[in-house]
Length: 115
Image 1 (tube, rainbow, N blue to C red):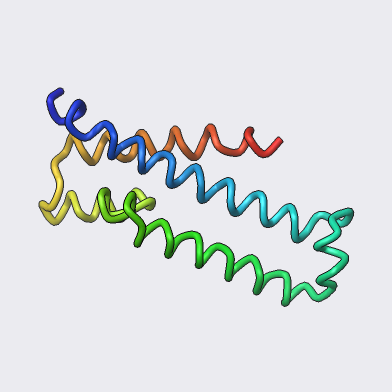
Image 2: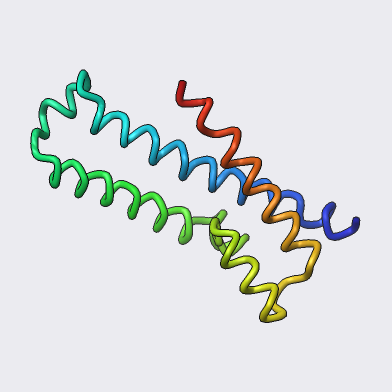
């Protein structure tokens, strides 16, 4: 379990990164698409709202990857990238397992925060 103790902050950063991604996507999608939202009324065009949401998500992911947390962990966010890195021999099996579990925890516990 030395791997867990040494890399636990990295696992938590990945969980927080994925939770942030879920919160950003859910929050901005609600803000843009909820019929009673002033933003929905201000941007009447569906393609324009989709463009805004895409731009916000692109900025969020880019910031996550290039800021300090992303540089530290690689900002995989996607477990498929982690598993590919494992298959290529770049990270160990315990790291792969813990990254995957922590991301799932981040993804599961983030949506209730939007309620």
